[in-house]
Amino acid sequence: MTEHEGKIDGVLPCSGVDIANPTANEHGSTLSIARAVDPDKIPDGGYGWVCVACVFTINGFTWGVVASYGVYLAYYLANDVFPEATPLDYAFIGGLNFGVSMLVASPVTYLQRALGTHIPMLIGIGMQTAGFIAASFAHTIWQLYLTQGVLVGLGVGFIFIPSVAVTSQWFDKRRSLANSITSAGSGIGGVIVSFATTSMIHNISLGWSLRIIGLMSGMMNILATCLIRNRNKVIQPPMHPFDVKLLKRLPVFLLLSWGFFSMLGYIVLLYSLSDFARSIGLSSSQASSITAFLNLGTALGRPCIGLLSDRWGRLEVAGLTTFACSLTVWAVWVPADSYAITVLFAIINGGILGVFWMTISPLCVEVGGLRYLPSMLALAFGTIILPTTFSEVIALKIRQPGHDRPYLYPQIFAGVTYLIASGFMLALWLVQQKRKKQPGI
Image (cartoon, rainbow, N blue to C red; front, side, top):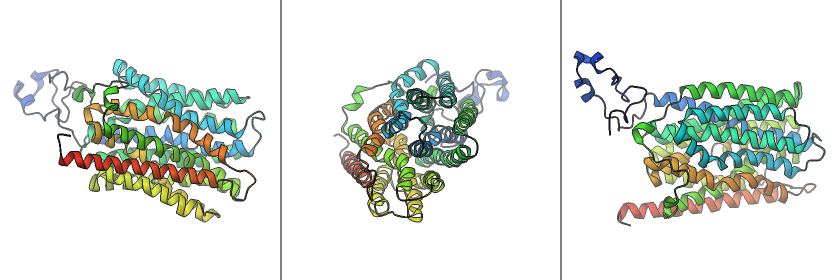
């Protein structure tokens, strides 16, 4: 590797040595460069913690904002905001936030290779902010589709995709912990935005809540984007938007299958809990608070999952957490009939339901290697386009309004999909264990 390839902003990583001006270094000699830390070595900290804070903020004001759509969904379903709209329309809009953001994963990976990390992210910030502000002026459902659905989804994708691999580039032994901390940002952001959205809708207006959330998220994302740094010059990842060769590997197929089925259950839980609370007779304020409690559980639970992953194994913890999601659906959500039990489920499941987001980056490294992380992530995000777009649509379609338990079928759907996902993770673990014992296979 040349000096230029190992340079980040004129400084060798972790060395503080200015290679652009070697005469200014110790004794005017280049011997200080020889004593510099190997640029190939993963820092496992240092400026990486600044990047953790940046990605934490980005997750908070992209996915945290998207997660609060459950508050908007419950409001739209309970009030005749758009007379021509059906419940499925509102479900599609929430699904588009995820689906469109994942759909642009490959194009954004290509743009990142051509333009660097920051330019695509700044473009995304502009789109997300514009989407929320434009949605505040929507008068028909198709306008809401284009603004709060498509434009916000595009913005989230352009911001999130370039940032998601950064944390893993800075950490090795503490990689799962660092990624779980950044992933917890969506929980903190979700708590803030959910409570703020509820308050603004009731005390100001729906329109102003959308405008304020858009402007607030835009400012926070700009700050984080300015400070984030990757290590692509050192690692030199190929960054192929769609690497077909990786799909031929059995572990990659199993990992992608796990992601597909786990996201089917995830979207149902994320978006349905607030309206579920209304269906069992809770007030609108109690129903809105359920989404906030779900995000609180996310903020508290994800760092714990990261610590356990680094200690007990990333595949093992991901599989057990996925199984636990299914178990809590059957044991807690299905029999829930009061505010207290629903809050309990929201907090417990909030910490584990987004297991995909908190583990996908470390798992991609585990399966494909650090060098192929951007390509693996592009494949993973491409795989979950369909489940994130249509899962809540399926849930509302099989919901039975007017029945004693209108959400029974969506609950069964979520429980089964998480159970299937845990089976794929078990299969992946068995394959990886076999390959460790027989490296040649």
